[in-house]
Amino acid sequence: MRCLVMVKANQDSEAGVIPSQRLLTEMGKFNEELVKAGVLLEAEGLQPSSKGARVRFSGSRRSVVDGPFAESKELIAGFWLWQVKSMAEAIEWVKRCPNPFDGESEIEIRQVLAAEELGAEFAPEPREREGHIRPDGGAAMMS
Image (cartoon, rainbow, N blue to C red; front, top):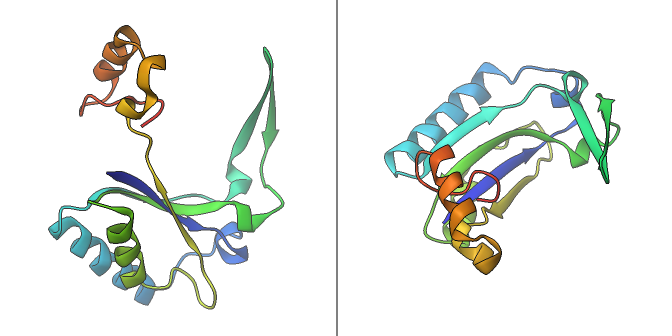
């Protein structure tokens, strides 16, 4: 199963504070372990929400809201995309992760929705189209 592992933002990440050299080194070692175990598919940090935007949908209307966004605890500072055997394995990996920030931090794990879980709603024609978008043949929109 694939899962998205999200590091929740805090006031420092939203202020654009760069992690310490010590933390960057520890995270680098952790990421190397993930690579050696065949778990890590992708990993990135994100710019603060002040450099982002949200697009809101209401029927056919679209509106854009520029950052920053008020609730930093609802924001993401970075992410990993992992390939693991189970949620339990993902949790064990996160428990080994260095604390992303001084003090309290939170990391959320969410299983990626696989194309086969979409059932009949994801008919063969759209499934084939999606297979051309992603190199692994999965659905780009939902998995």
